Image (cartoon, rainbow, N blue to C red; front, side, top):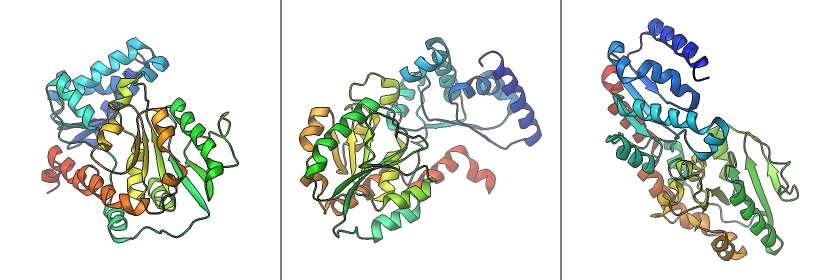
Length: 325
């Protein structure tokens, strides 16, 4: 991949650039794509292209998970080339605030903004103009959207719910929306867990509005800091858009827990013992919770995840508005 495929990929991309003659180029250097992108867009070759280049970093490639899959030497090389692409791009941004700060420390360059998924105007209209339904429901429904990355933390959550579910006044349901199936896992209990498939983002946000909570775990022992501290879970933004109170579980230095600190969005747990002590039937079944957290959801979303503002900032920083005009 590094010495064979990347050369063919670079040649193919060069040919596409010659044919399309773009006014600007937006790169997202991720995993194996880093090698051909660096081959074409390294500092040495940028001057010959004479095209503005915008770089967005979503994940660092040298996390322990990637090292186990691809090898330490390869992922370190990826990280080095990725840093170079970021450092010498015309404009740049990254997917979380800690990542922007780490890149500034390593490259001396601060990106234009945190670029992530966001809430559209219709999402803000729903949050600001509608009142949460507080009528009694036949079941208490907790959402999990996406891939389970930290399964030990997820299993701890399941174990706590198993001890509580018989004391709920309504039926407990844990609902999965994912491209992956977890039905074969030893902890999966079909009597109170449901797999609902993979939905487009817009449809998922609509479906989640009928649920009561969203759950997000990150590693509590910080054993993979390159992922835990710098990557940011998109499901957090999806839960915000749906107006769900959020159960956040992770290490204090994780990107998730640091961003949620200034906001009252539900509940935050830093350890299994703390989660076991705080998660009670009365707390989870509080009918006022969705109404109580709604102003904080709007505040957090306006502060960091306003899609229209993010797009405008991206277009301005990359100079696309000027060229379009």
